[in-house]
Length: 152
Image 1 (cartoon, one colour):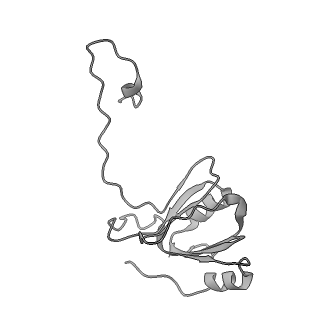
Image 2 (cartoon, one colour; image 1 turned 120 degrees about the horizontal axis):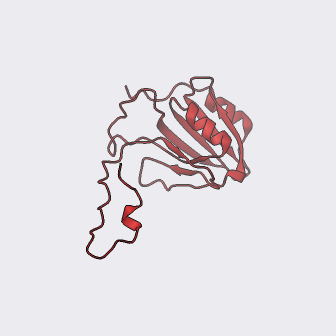
């Protein structure tokens, strides 16, 4: 087993440091979780859409569809984030715990389709900025809407 900190340790003269292990191509990951997160980064597939990073303290509600989560709505004081996809329950759990660091929309041009059919996959993210705050009725209707795009 190699020592991951070996490259940072002092070496006696004449000893060559180990090069860092090569990194493979980055595949698609729908989200990541960390112990302490103050903001959720929301990454859209299109490079024209900016990444948003609202603070968790503005998150009012997480609304989602049943046990096989395919729709998810994040209700903030000033915006609504509508997420559609498959296997979104792990994302919901991370959001409810406040540990989700980012969520990102799948982009077929950037990544190959994930091979694990049970892994979370975000098909679309829609961000709606509301001047006077979001309406609860609109959020409920989004979760009850038709299923998202089928990427199979």
